[in-house]
Structure formats: C-alpha cells, structure tokens
Length: 366
Image (cartoon, rainbow, N blue to C red):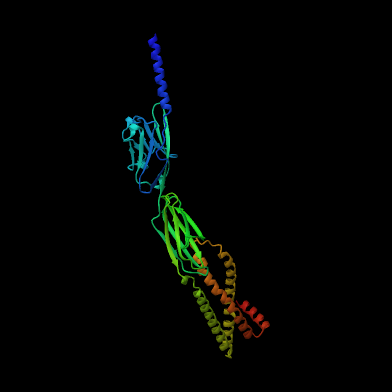
C-alpha cells in the first residue's frame, strides 16, 4: 500500500513539472521588424523559449485577411510542407535548428504584395503558441525626370516626375542652399503593382539659379536628388512685347487698308461704287466689331477664372499661355478698331441721324 502511495505521489509531481515547464513556454520573434527590398529576399524567424524541439509540432505561417496559410509544416506527417499559391516556388522553410525550437521562413523575389504582418503558430495536441513579425518592403525609384515648359506671362513651369517608389516618399523642390521651395502642385498615384508615381510642379517668375528635385524614402532613409539650372534668359519678357508690337502693326495696317479703300470709293461718282463703299464701310466693319466686342467680353470673364486652373492640369499650358496671348491680341484689336471704325462711319454717312436711318435700312435688308 505504501508503494502505491509513493507511486501516485511521484506521478503527480512529474505531471506538475511537465505542466509548469509547458506553462513557461513562449515564442518570441528574433526580429519584430524585417526590412526587405523589392526583388530581394527576407527571413522571418521564430524561436521557442525555453529551447525545445518542435520537430513534431505543426508550424503554420499566416497573414491577416488571407484565408490560406502562407506556409504549413505538418511535423513528421509532412516533411516538405505546403505553400500558398502566390508563394509557390519562392518560399523556403529553414529547419536546421528545429531541434532547438528555431524555425525560419525565407521568402525570395519579394514584391510589394508581401508587405505586412506575419504570424507563426506552433501547435501540438495540447498547446498552441503564436508570435508575430512585420515585413516592411521598400523600393527606390530608378529615374527622376525634370521638364521645363516654355515660358509664359506668369513665369516658367518646372515639372519633376519619378516612379517605382514604395512606400509613399517625401518630395519637394529645393534651391541651391538646400532650402525648400513652395510647391505649385504635387500628385501621387499607384499602378497595379502598387508602386508610387510622383509628380510635382513648380511655377516661378524669377531665376532661382540651380534648383533640385528632392525625393526621400522614410523607410530606408535613402534619397535621390536631380538638379537643373534655370538661366536668366528664360525669364526675359521681350518676346511678349514683340508679340504686342507685331499685333499693333497688323492692326494699323488693316485699318489703313480699310480707310484707303473707303476714301478711294468715295471719290468715285457712280452709284455702284457708292453701294460698294457702303458695303465695305458699314456691313463688314460692324460685323468685325461685333465679333471683337463679344470676344472682349469673354476675355473679361476668362481672366479671373484663369487663376483657378490647377497647374497640375494637363491643359494648363493651353489655358495659361495660348488662350491668354490670343485674347490679348483680340483685346488690342477691339481698342484700335473701335475708334477708326466710328470715325469712318460718321464721315461716310454724314452724321448721326443719317447713320441711324441707313443702319435701320441695312438691318431690314438683311
């Protein structure tokens, strides 16, 4: 009877020892934050503490939001393990130290889709142990392009583009002293592979000397810089005044042709010439003047709204440069056309009352 009691006591003590050792079993990760580059490889490790063999335990690697495990090791029941389809042929379960409770999941050909937290689960018939590790994927753009658009009345537009970044980097313009310049616009987009495409635009009306497009990846601490020198000749506004002078010369020439034609026709005595003079000096100038006045109204409406167009808009050069120059020319046409046409009309029609009467007759005939 005494031997039976001793047997029960020793068995109970052995059970408590096993329970206590199992209760102290933990699964910390070697690296809670693992950094990998796109196209490279990453190793995610888990270690059972205190060390013990997990050769016959089920080891499962999984991700949140993924119904299928990334990798499943079934212990002695499946030596090769099972990988999820998206990890097929690029994942390896390293188990050289599995007898000491250490396992590693090696992932090759890393992509942005692999970014995120992972968990490893050790499971046997009685206990389960879970640990987590975060895989951070980074990519640095390969090329940065700077484009300078043709100067306009508002200044020079400088555009910087870059692609192939992850995660979203910081981007800004800097002067030759490294001081940040105020941006006119900045935009980000992602392609199907989740790479970031960047674009920033700077509008300046004075020479900054050497300016630099600066891009910084906050995850890796890497940066890229591309510089360009804005020459003073880009900000020379002589071409604008030249356009205005050419426009004024064309206006004066056009008015001179009309005035000369009317003077020549007025000297003719035949009624046919008089009718022709009326047609030239009344109908055509009035039609042209009406068109120019309508365009001038549009010009007055357009000017305030032009400032609302974002510089990142693909049509910004059209809104800002071409339409502005066109409307400026038309505006001067209105100014220089109005007075000569009124003078010609009064001289030809012989006064205000005759002008009203003939204008009514002209409208009735139309």
